[in-house]
Image: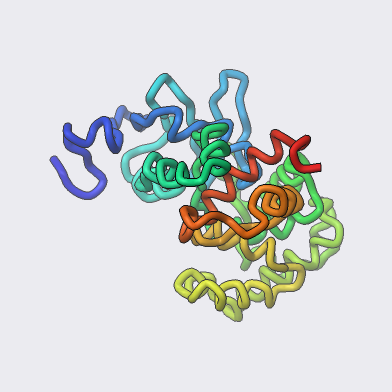
Length: 292
């Protein structure tokens, strides 16, 4: 049967094929279009853990999954067809043709080199509240510490689910005090997290409405939250709202842009600056000598 979410034989190689196998979904996708290490451990998300066998375990929207590579197949363990279509397919941005994007980026030699260095990076479509809260916690932190903060926040205030805990809702966090967040050990960020939770829980900031706003209006609304500046707002919009035109600028990216693109990102990245940024961010972190 063909239709939305299904593939015919002609699309097998081009777009991939989904094979339901009990509680396992297999997606045929070249490693160059999804590398788990490059995607899940590059600083865009904080709830995935690499296992000794190279697979990753994580919880998204309260759903647990173990994902692994076997040749040209990506296996999603513990996932049925309904969960795959509702949660994991959009989360891994599987309907976007990254091969075409990389061909588009090849118009610029520097961007082409960055994409060739880590071609398997994809932008994850995270739950908006989780992305916003996580990047508030990320300020002045490294990836290992951010993962610890997020894990403790979930363990103390999330709901038990298979494989661990869900991400706490804004309604769960809104009534808390900074002292209540002491076990998370997030320091000055506690006040920022609580301000965000209260604004979202009260409806003062409607994340569904933010998703549909003009991008400048969306940035302005998110920056009403204490502790949310341009970088955190860009991260939340890119990774949580799927706004691919957003381009977060941290220390690495500022060095990268000033060194390699002093006149700004090339025209071939227009509209998908966030994806171009992710290739450049990873490339610059792995070549620090170029950006002293």
